[in-house]
Length: 84
Image 1: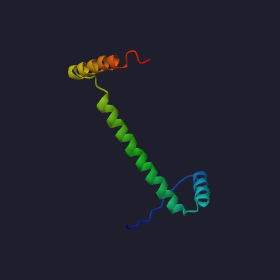
Image 2: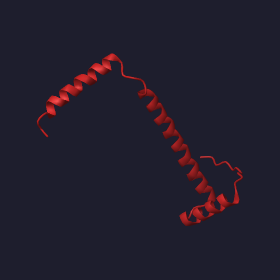
Image 3: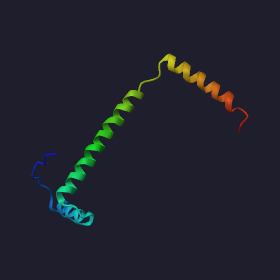
């Protein structure tokens, strides 16, 4: 994998926290930033997936789905009736 060098600017307080965390993790600052960016990218992908899943389920069930759900509930009630 090809590494690309880059420069970033940040507030000193954030830099100091990153420096301290990198030392405690025994990794370089560069490695810490790579880990953090990978984690952020993965988090964003998960948020996008979650949004797409929510969008797929936000519409009301159509009549076929409503009928299946109603039938399923009736069958479930009959199965568990008297078990409690």
